[in-house]
Image 1 (cartoon, rainbow, N blue to C red):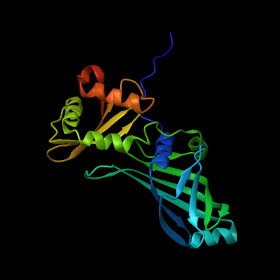
Image 2: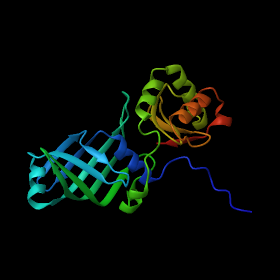
Image 3: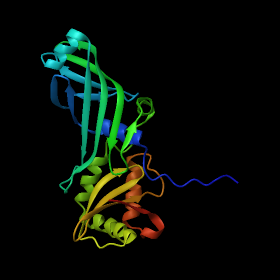
Image 4: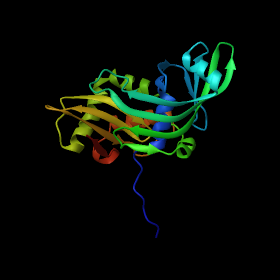
Length: 236
């Protein structure tokens, strides 16, 4: 008889980093001679490769036009899309070579040839191999997560119901509850306790394939008893 494997309740580090790359709207670019905060100027190809669109007049663009490449480091920060304490959910650093891709009018497109990548988040700090990152796929809810969390935030009774499940699973009494993170495997809640806070994940009964599936899972959890519809794990 085959071995029964435990249910997967979180994504791999490579998947989480790929999701962060796809979901964040801004990043910080560092080269040996330059630092820039870029908003809405990066894209991620199907193979996970990062590309930057830089105005041709900027120092980095001029350097790329002269030399063709430069050492570079990309820093990304993932924030909870709601007004909660300690909003930082994850940080990532990608290092490698920024290489000239093309010049189109007044804009230079450069690609990052990745040498190393590091992720820091509540699911565990990890170094991600470039080849593993290239093969990873973003979470199917990445494009919808912020709006779903905001929608939940506008329905405090539903959040309280979820919070009661999480608090019961951890044996604590939460003063307030906030939705913190949502992915195909479940939802993470911020439980505000009398002296500190704890983050707890309520896992879906099965991974969500997309938006409609996630909404159905959430609706089930909101009306379910925690012992039969959810498992709770803690993130300190």
